Image (cartoon, rainbow, N blue to C red; front, top):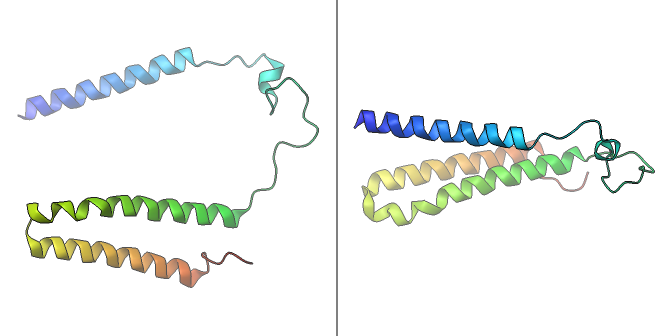
Length: 118
């Protein structure tokens, strides 16, 4: 059994390594092309800077959304596995996970990261 798992893990690693190697060989871009080095790849010289100021507040809210979105996807399989496991362990795990989520939400709210207007 262990040999089979080791073989499967090794095969997966080799396939991933081969795909990454092939993509890096085929995906090489030439750095000598001036149009490809310009921020806009349409052939025109840019009129302004391609580096516009970025709102850090928007970035933090986007990261918080992604974190909670991933946690919600982790919560989705909780309901269907109720019949497959012990009820007390299911309740303990679900409540513990929800408490962690609520503590994280409270911390973000307390730090003011959820304030849209500032």
